Image (tube, rainbow over all chains, first blue to last red; front, side, top):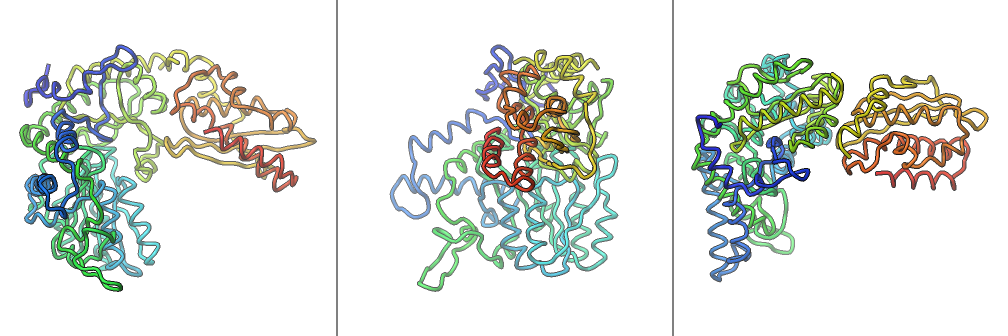
Length: 414
Length: 146
């Protein structure tokens, strides 16, 4: 059985890890894709091919290996620009991941532009990586951090945004395009529109959205955009910060060192061009090259198809889950407003106990606060269980998952 | 160990009907800790009288293992000599819970209560009875639990 949108059987053949068994003889049912996705053989081979055949440092040396490596590394930048529809390749800065991208903005833009009594607006469903960096800036500058609330349907209460914007003190609004806990897809274009009307800068955390939706920066019209490779078939340790060219030009460097300079003298240094001004030191060359293979893979399938497949799978799972006695499901009920992330609690079984039990059946889900303790407080729970899908998940796997949840209920005598 | 072995009647009973749940006003020992990885929280209050644990209570939220372990630990130490409490080991806790061979992720849940107890004892020994030699030993034990 497969969804009508993509050929899952063919796709699954590309993922070596999906062939392995866990707990001796259980086929792996990997439903922790919001944490990190598995990697297709194409990505793994691109990385080993670099190390086996043209490993060298980039940008400086003139030998053939360096030229090949530089070309492969820079080609990834072009592919990313195309993937998210960025206008300029020099607006694409390689970082370690979404967390580093947001910290870069907080450090290199935030500290220059946010002052005493200014307001930074984030939301109650942010990952800690889009809260803590702003707490640091707010504390240092004597600025205020405010939150757009989440309603009972798991959606943002945009009236809160208007209230803050009216004060005239907001310098930045920063939010996730898709909640990593609720799966809620943020009405990003509407938020950006309201912010632009007040001349307020916008950062969008795309860690959960870029892997699952078609993202078009020209439509979004935000100022900063961050995402990670490892949540979209790529390797760990690579992420992207996209920012408007004029902002990157005005920003101070994040790290000082090699590759980010034009000329270094004893007491003065001039900066390299964009984006190299923000890429000090030898970057993660191998994994950036591996990321290109992940982008090619997703391009071949088509992001519209990815989205349709996940919607069908999520609907299938939600229909079954909502019939279970004692289950509490979080997030929007409307399938068009959410991605393939399902958070829930089952009776009084704590998520850690639940994850331990179903792990025995080969099922990998996430349990805990998902680095979103502000949201946990809002939901008034200490933790949730979370199943999240990707292109290689099947309806049969959802069935195995449901059967295993029923076994957990039996063990807990529910 | 398998889930069927972990989630036996005794664990579920301690989880759903925690013993000595609550707070003591103005206790001799008040200690709180959490497990940053899963967010399990635990606070333990203890009164000491005539070198014995005269009262102990706990509050917390978390998985069945962490809460059952805290619940059982309060029963283990209630009314016991202070020396007995100082000497409690992680094996004592795991034996009493019947939990052996827990994986590295879950053993932290089982030992959070003992960590809270040992950290509380440390503060008590240092602040109230100025026994820094015993205190240091207890502190070392507490940090070795995870």
